[in-house]
Image (cartoon, rainbow, N blue to C red; front, side, top):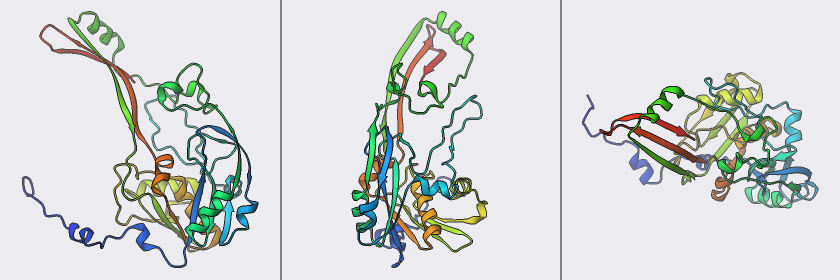
Length: 312
């Protein structure tokens, strides 16, 4: 029995002596390097993408946009938080590369593949993109304002769903007879996990099966989602998570860059390496929290809880 006993950690010596094996440590010498061009706007109509100058730069193997993905019939990224108890829940399609409009700062617009990461970054900076900036919001409260810009046409008022749980009549009755009512407006700030190791991926395709080595927190859910995007059986994907330099929940998702790396590996017949820059993570990885709530607590004379009401 281990209850109450200290358990010796087995991995510390390996990490403390620099013998951890992260995605960047597994890079083959002949791998191609991927860089993603991102939108500098949080909300904008996307116009022409001129890649002529970038394609002529040294070391460039390919530059791709949403039209290239559409030609291969890739599906949008699936939503993993569809609530069965909520009806209707609006789930707009999330593209791997933006098409016609960008909807968040850092959204992927184009993919550059080159013989070195430096060459790919230089070419990405040479791509000319036409944007028509639209009004943007920086938090959920402003997005729900009556005059807020519409982000998705499928979601009027920028509302994905409404969720009600509990007994409305009983709650109202409890507050009506309460001796004391405590109210609070709460704000849980938006956070970014900021792990030491940014997201990274190594992708290859052997003509039959994909292999993805990535900075993940599990493989089974990601494999199911990849199967959906590529419209292939799950058995077509082999996923590996080596040592991970921090995750804190932020690496538990399928990101567009993983799809892009796999797609490019199949397209070009080469191993593709993608490694995010630390600054890139703040715009392109997931955020958490940003929760605003109004809460009321009903109590009797003895301080016993009668009802709790939360609107968030």
